[in-house]
Length: 79
Image 1: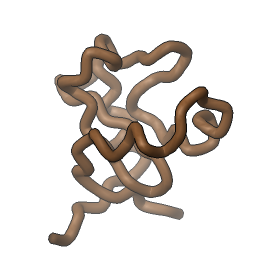
Image 2: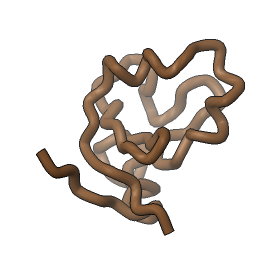
Image 3: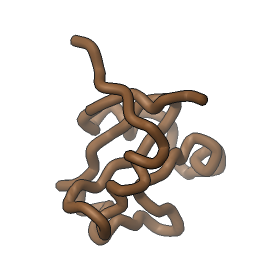
Image 4: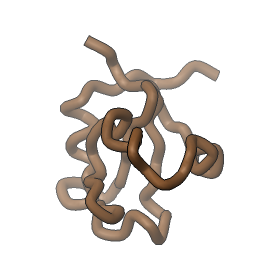
């Protein structure tokens, strides 16, 4: 299955405020966290939806395994 490619601008609109979708990006993939109780209102602790969290999550108290539970919906366009 080929994933749709989204730009940072398209991702930014899915912040839980501008559109009903709540998306985050990590390591080039975009995840739909709309129905996650951890991302209500587009925030998770000090993290905001609608952006690439790759650099921010280097200091997270969990590893990449948390992303295995999320639905991948696209790829982030790398400029």
